[in-house]
Every structure is written in C-alpha cells, then in structure tokens.
Image 1 (spheres, helix red, strand yellow):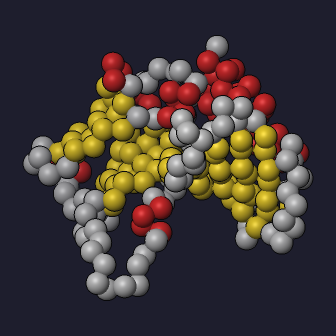
Image 2 (cartoon, one colour; image 1 turned 90 degrees about the vertical axis):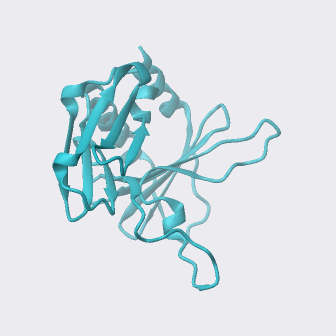
Image 3 (cartoon, one colour; image 1 turned 90 degrees about the horizontal axis):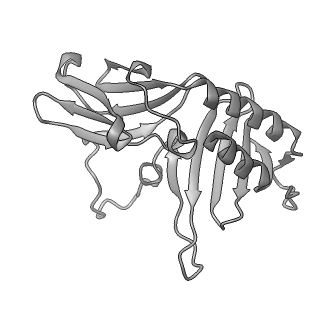
Length: 203
C-alpha cells in the first residue's frame, strides 16, 4: 500500500531535531538525496512549515520549495524602495493546515462567496478554484494524497470566505491522520537539541 511506502520512507530517512522558540524543527534526509524540513508548534503539535529541497542531476542543491506555510518570497521583504516587487493587492496563495484538515488561504479576493466555485478534479488529481466573474483561477494538487496515492473525495472539500480571504479546507482521510499520529510519536522520541547546541544528533 502506498501509505505504507511513504511511512517507510519517513522512518528510514535520517532525521535531525532542534527545539527553538516554541517550535520543533525537524530535518529529513531521504535515501534519494531529497531533503524535507518541517516546523511544528510545541504546544499543539500542529505543522506550521514544510519545505522541500531536491538535488539536480549534477548534484547541486536547489532552493527550498515551500509546501506548507508562508511562501518564502513574502517573507523576504526588501527594504530597498527601488526594487520592483509584486503588488500587495495581488491574491496570495498559501497552505496552513489544521489537525483535521489540509487548508489553503487565498488573501486579497474581495468578491462575494457566491462568485467562487471550488471543485475536485479526480482525473487530474487536483482542486480547482474559479470565479464566475473570471477574475481568479487556481489549480493545485494535494501532495500528501499524491505521496500516499489516496483518491480525492469531493465530499471532503469545503470553503468559506471572510475578510477578503478565501479559505479552502479538505478533510484529512483517516489514513493520513493515522500516519501523522504515528510520525509525531516518532518525532517526540528524537532528542531535540536546543538552539546553540550545533552538534545535532542525526538518527
């Protein structure tokens, strides 16, 4: 089963943990050279950040790609007023999960809720957001379901709209919830070094 395959890949990866500033930071190095970094809230165990870094065919490291959390571009705010930067009025798309749902927030969408259509496209394994006024269109996959090769279910999808922000939620399947629970038990067994203790033990 593919869920088991992803679970085994997580278990066999080299993991380094660091506890800092109320967060549990975990770095994974997989056997194929891919790296994954995650940040969890220490109190709630909620995932705040997940990013990936791949190696090119020549062995060079790519830059980090954010899967969950604030996009890196929005974190790097330039103080130089001469630099051309994206308008702050453009829609910004980010993923911020809860314990029970995968969740995406698209800010700067000032249209009423009835303008939006959010649907699952099972053949393309993606979710499509569009507006009847043709002002916004977004197609995105759910990497967690792809890694575990789980089907997409229309009934798991819902959305709300408030304060110019569209919030799309997808209820996590029981297989994902079980996997996340199992992983958190493993991560809590890792010796989490505090910042300053540079010699992180890799397991």
